[in-house]
Length: 117
Image 1 (cartoon, rainbow, N blue to C red):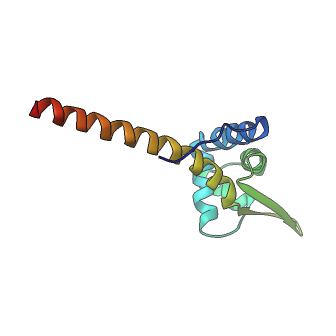
Image 2: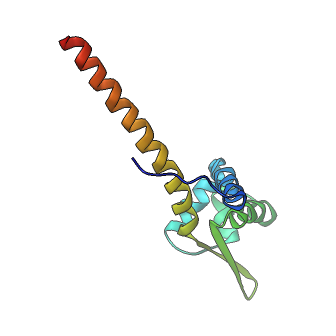
């Protein structure tokens, strides 16, 4: 099973920000768009018929979580996916995947032993 160290307060806050950002379907779709390449804030908001201000608010949440970085190129605010933050969340989830996988394997073995016994 994968070992999970107890997170520091800073790591805990980072995970909270990541999962908060991922909890919204609009932001998850924005991340999917960014996985295909850099996009302007306007391009990220376009599928939702969202104003620049509305899209920017979602992007700020993604930035706070470390999932997205933004640069200003002339008048355009260009966003880029930052996959390292997703790796942080993935490591946390992997621990629980291993934990529950181990529990289910033990249950399966107990049921086999009971049926054979």
